[in-house]
Length: 573
Image (cartoon, rainbow, N blue to C red; front, top):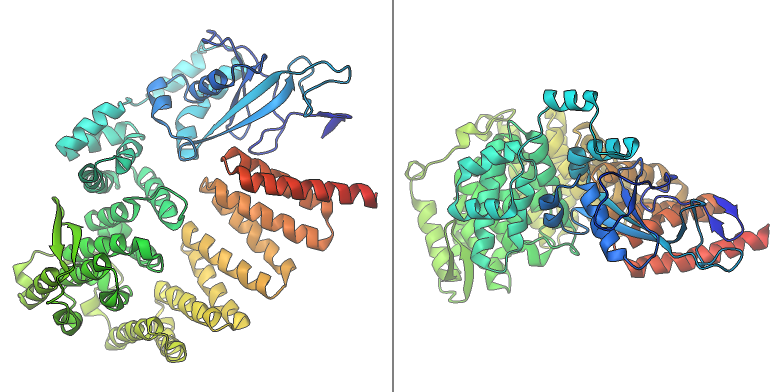
């Protein structure tokens, strides 16, 4: 909202709400900055000179972390927090001068440096930070002290201490620490980006076991970890090394809680660089829980035996051997003379081997009696174990796998017919997860064939099941697919309810990138409808989100479009 010509009311760059005037917080910090807190959880530091922006950003980060500097220095931009800057701020008038000068031509040098922690970190810190701002002092009231006596603050462990215990593989101690300090899982996750490859693999193994160990006592923390890992695996722009492998280890160690996430792993198979990781994760799960893997569309791995990449076909052979997929024995025999080399992690160390050697080991494993290898399949609860399922369901599962093979071979019409056939069986039996998977596959096939209208109904059915199952990640994916269909059909008005639902979900998941993209889509629809004011509001918020996350190119592109739209509004006024 404009205060006067050339003057703007200061709004939070993350949520566009009005922000309060910053104030001094006692005791004063090194830079003698004033601080503020937005209702959305963002904090900001005021630098009156505009020359100490780096120090102001650091102080804002420290304030956001409630002066827990060990935590503050362990956080990573974009992954753990977002930052933004508002320049041309006049403290006395509590107003922004975008051009940097007031009406008298006086230079306005002040700046506000913003930090917003991701939601799980805010849960730990925002309450006490907000209390400090509201009181203007760190002196605690008797009611605050009483509250802390009821809910004792857990211990905080340093990155160095966590890394030392990861190196020692002390799972019990790390699990105990993770229950006391929610950030321990994040600190182990940091080690996935270590320079040394062996250290990264060690972090994968330890993180999977620690997360599984605490999952019954702290399911929300493990759930947040799984969401972060899956989102990074789905985002090709994110640093996602080890994400898929870690999800696989969590499932391997806690199949009863997280077995349904196998389909998310297999759903990434079209991303070619991720295929070795996907195959490794499925093989690790299938080694202990082959029946659990067989309830999903694992037959897609058969086609990967023909890959040009030795790492992909080698991992495919290894994974099929781990789950004792005897159906693949014929294809594996063709690889026994394949002397192409690749690296694989065997659970203890990284080894250099050949595709042929792995194929022969896979065949040997398949020919051994099942009793020779320990299996924990009996620990995997479900509606019915695979062996107890009715014959028509077992036949339908086999039909589903046949449809997958047909699809991967490009026989789309035959695949559609087979998927439709098994859909009826699962639908009549009330197997809702299978129904959702098949409907999505049918929709994908229709899109591949260019029949967009036919894809709409199966996609919407999958979406309804994902919503009912309270699966936010799958729901967002299906919302995106429905939106794409309507946009292709140029039925833009129909996209809005799906855009708003998707925006709500990704905001809850703290996915800033997708929030900005959905806001841009909403703005585009409003612009097409002639609702230019509404379009501008959405575009401006999207531009702030992109700029806040450092996507300057996208932000600048939106800014240009916003300027054109503003000019259009002036002309039509």
